[in-house]
Image (cartoon, rainbow, N blue to C red; front, side, top):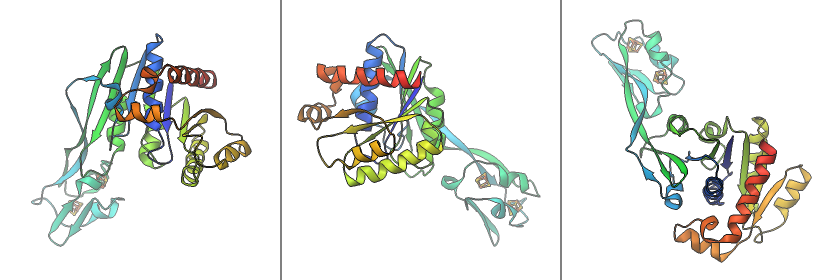
Length: 281
Ligand code: SF4
Ligand code: SF4
């Protein structure tokens, strides 16, 4: 079973929920892997403290132009949807960070001037922490395309009965790539106007992708009741509400898991996981 944890915006407590679910699942005898797909800013390792293997590089195939064969026809630039290759006068410029590796330019090149070379954009690490398996990826600074790294992290994650996928914030391509094959999507939000706005976008994404989903409201006793009203009016189940508790904030600031150091929260995350099991099973 694959459970993805997402949020329409950053800072809602998504990683707190994801790491705690992975922790309580693995401590209750299940085979669990935590997969951090937030490759621009992975931070699950801060709380789970895994022992990691060496880095495995991740790359995409980008075009390399042999100027001696190029006849400057411009076909490569015309076919590229991403402006990653441009024929300008006597030169062909390649912008590797924009290239999606589709291979289109080398196919259309009439003179065989284009070959493909590996362009490293990030790396993947796997490891474990106690009985919990772990995988995360890291997009190189300056690289724009995280989906290939996300795909690589998911492919490298050790097999387990339960995978907890920690998705990046937002609702754009990297999130779609992270959650696309999950059995259940958990949307973490907070009861503020900004939180509600971004929750609506995340709900639209889940419905468009036809994914079963539910909501966790973090810092539920702050803000207003609009999020509760929205969920009630739109037949969206609130699976749990996490209070704005100083003890959670303190454990977070120390890099500790609330589910490990605060017994009441361990029970809360166990109950949440049980509810998800019932809905995703
Ligand atoms: S491989 Fe595809 S995306 Fe990359 S430069 Fe060529 S046509 Fe553009
Ligand atoms: S398609 Fe080939 S020949 Fe034409 S401009 Fe591009 S690299 Fe040169």
